[in-house]
Length: 285
Ligand SMILES: Nc1ncnc2c1ncn2[C@@H]1O[C@H](COP(=O)(O)OP(=O)(O)O)[C@@H](O)[C@H]1O
Ligand SMILES: [Mg+2]
Image (cartoon, rainbow, N blue to C red; front, top):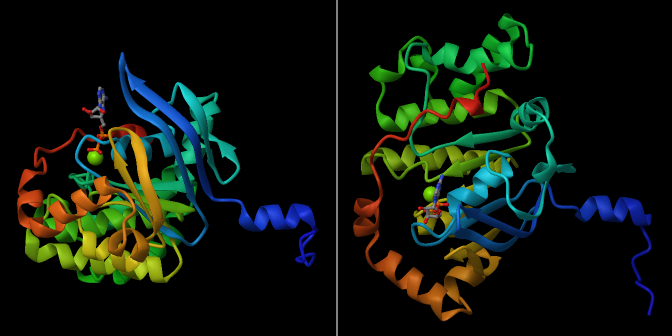
């Protein structure tokens, strides 16, 4: 039987449903250790998609694949039509990273630059924006993350939550197509977690495409369009947030959720707090 929906031409219909991020059968090993074992994942424009799962299950590795920082041995990764798994030159990698913002657990701000300069440096040096307009945008973004009064402070003078909000504003300053958040509240003092989640919630409401890795299950349930549960390098289950959190189909998902919901503080305490090395490849300046 023919489809009843003939309102869109075939090419337009395909474009309308094409995911912004598309992973198919992605396999990645570190040496002889397989870490991703056939990941399929879709993120549509304007969606917030969350990846949850135990520590070591491959969540960060999936995000790093999306930015081209890691190359899978097998499978396809597409971001807005670009085959990320096939990027041939450093120039193409930099082009991709202009479009994909990445916010880490450790904020990785440039400590020797003021908050304002942290937001201005990459748009000027990488995107070639003029300094006055980049500065204007930076002030707007600082207002958005409720830090307009900290423009001239240095990162070391700010709380963890404030630094993380600067890191989010810095990612936004590049006007990316999507932003990846990797456990961005895990290293924060509990009292500053809420202010960072509020900023992310606002971004999701504004329609920014977001991929989140988080242990904040209530937040994930509230903001996510889709949730993926990973374990040992496979997607055990995925679906709409309310279905996955309220009626998970896999016993593994149920067990994981029971554990994290029963003991969120223990989960938080178990997370690594050691600072990660600043990954300058992300800020090619
Ligand atoms: N650069 C690396 N070299 C070797 N093993 C790694 C590297 N990065 C991650 N791994 C391993 O890959 C697995 C998945 O890591 P990761 O994606 O960071 O998990 P998650 O973010 O879910 O905690 C872990 O067993 C981790 O030790
Ligand atoms: Mg991780």
